[in-house]
Length: 249
Image 1 (tube, rainbow, N blue to C red):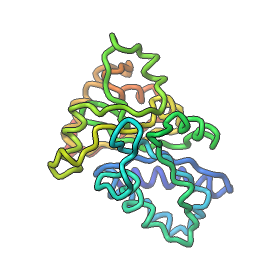
Image 2: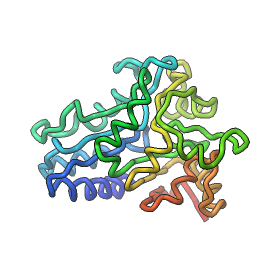
Image 3: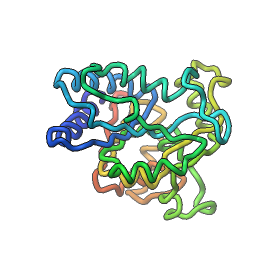
C-alpha cells in the first residue's frame, strides 16, 4: 500500500516538476502514512527533484480551543508530525522551503480555501478514512441535519471532534492517553477536497472495513453520514487498501 501510494504521488509530482510547473500536494497524517512518506522522500532524494516548486497543504491541525492551534511541540501536532515524518527527510539541497508548507489556521480558517484556490487548486489530495467514515475531520452528520449538497460544499473550518474520533485517535496515535487528544481541530472542508484534481485514499486498519463496505453498498450515492462516500463520484479517485486487514466484497 505504501509503495504503490508513494509511486502514484511521485509520478504525479514529477510530471509537473519536469515541466517547471508548481505542484500543490494535499497531505494527510496518521500511522497509515508513515511508510509512504519514507518512500516518497527517498524517491525525491534519489531523483534530485527540484522541490522548490512543491507546495504542501495539510488537511488539518489540532486546536486546543475553537481558535487556538496546539503548539508545534505538542505530541500530536500535525505540524510536528509532517516535519518529522516527511519534510526533515528531504535532502536540504532540493530546495523545499518552510513557507511552502501550509496548515489550516484555527484563528483564521476562512483564509485557507482562497489560498488554495489562488495557488491553482490541489493537484492531488492524499487521504485516510476514519473508523466512522470521516475524511480529514469532516465528521458524519445526519441527512436531517444537513443536505447532501450542503455537506459537500462545507469549507475549511474549526469544529469539535466527535467522541468516536477522540476514542480512535486515543488508541491509534496517543498511546491510550485520551488527555493528549485535543478536542478541536481546524480541518480542510469537503469543498476543497472534492475540488482536488486527484484524490488518493489509503486504508490499512481492520476497523476501516465497516465504513468502506457501507460506502460500496451505497453504490456511489453520497451521504453526509459517510463523508468518504463523496469520493466515489470524484472524476479521478483511487482507493488502495491492504487485503490482509480489510476484506471488501
